[in-house]
Length: 257
Figure 1 (cartoon, rainbow, N blue to C red):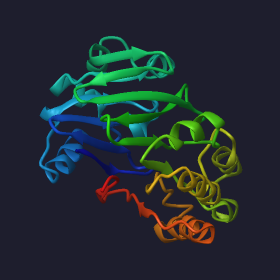
Figure 2 (cartoon, helix red, strand yellow):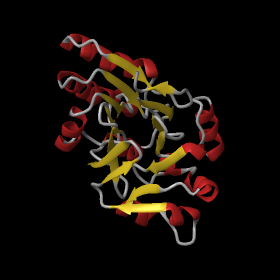
Figure 3 (tube, one colour):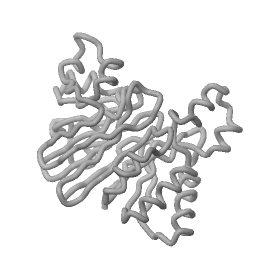
Figure 4 (spheres, rainbow, N blue to C red):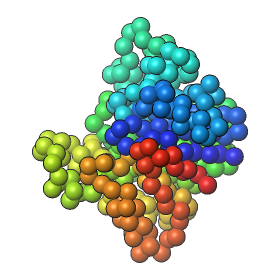
């Protein structure tokens, strides 16, 4: 049975755990080895059981724990060429564990098939992932400047999704951030707003998706209640009653089931 949990989500660090029988993978490792190990232990797992780590992109809130984890556990780390060139330095543990791919790639890992797709963001490269066990399919897409046709197409094929609901536009505009940072967040290579996420939720519900987890919320420019209410109201108005959850920065949230 396919299981997925957001272990950590947000600017303080991101990590998603996916398990199907004896096959376990991580999407990103943006917290310390100890923090990730602690979260896994609460789910009856550990880093010894992780077969592979799949990186979305090279930013620190998605990669913080990689060097220590690579040194200790030698877990294969799947990463795109642009992110590898920006992140990995010679003679580091991560260098030895990296499995480098084109932007669009597919890997078989135990009972799982993992396929990447490009996402616009201000990184060397960002990708989302489609994860399937042959029966259920999970889509993951965060750190999105905007929703491309490709993103919508890939996510529409899934049963469950984890998508970004990063900020409230007015909170960003009225908040304390300097102008350059506000411009970055609101740009087509920044992050996805609650409002755009809500529209994406309605589209995905129309495609038959029955569970959505909202992720990568900004602590400064959003609240869990605001993110949830924005998407829930849009879904209600469109007549869709699906499972909608919000991933917290420290709270484990079950994204499937």
